[in-house]
Figure 1 (tube, helix red, strand yellow):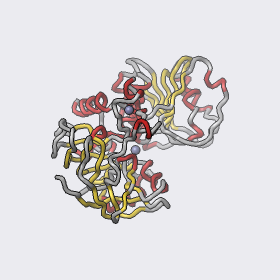
Figure 2: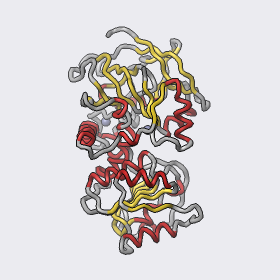
Figure 3: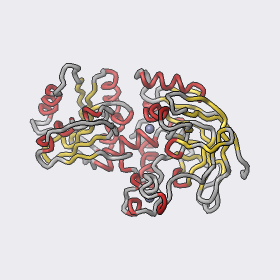
Length: 371
Ligand SMILES: [Zn+2]
Ligand SMILES: [Zn+2]
């Protein structure tokens, strides 16, 4: 338990490529745990990480078993199944203290010299003897990862790891944006533009919150059918030849007595669509951009009239200790469907294929099984 271990990992080279190579992972220091990963979700962010400054151990979603615990971590034990979570709340900074744990000032490195960061101790992970960075301080495309104990949440032993591993990104972001951030209430009306991993989970969150009308909007018929299975009550197929979205806006108006919906979400990842929710929501309604799209967009001020609230929430307002047990419960009650979100499993060696399937839209969500 107190020895360094070695295992395979996917390493991004910083120039758009990656290799599978062997990393060394040190035993945990105080307040840290080492996790033996079993499954990891593959996300568009992982593909983007191929060009982040490298070399970098990839992956920010995962589940596995505790392999070793450091000093002071007496509430976790080796062999315990855990979920990894990339927004690692310190529990002590100003944002954590006021309940905004996804905005933890250590995770966001607001003032690392004063507050510290969410990193594990220096030099914990090495490639060919040289210290290496990990995606979101996790690096889940690997057999072993060493993380701060706050990065793990114990899993119920009955929840399969190859399903649970996707909870720490798209599921939390989508469901949490509906339930925690927009605070959808029973009977509310909701519209969701873009039905990938995040959008489908906004729909699930809205359904769990008791929304009356859930309008799913996408260009692809297959995505609309997936949304119907997740709880959408109305489907609108967006047209390619409607740059001003006038047809789409008219359809939503018609469904809502010309009012607009109570909550409109953009989940496409296309920056040009970031303000579309403002045109779909009612006066005083919520417009949310949950896809984290970057890029420059201009918006006409009247889009905000009147009393519309615009938010770009991070990670569905996740408070791990509150939200993950709630997600586990909803899965066990059959309210939250994660099995049909995972379309294919891959070996770590087949990460390239997983990326190809994701980019071509052949899979809703791919999962790496790590042996
Ligand atoms: Zn992700
Ligand atoms: Zn904090």
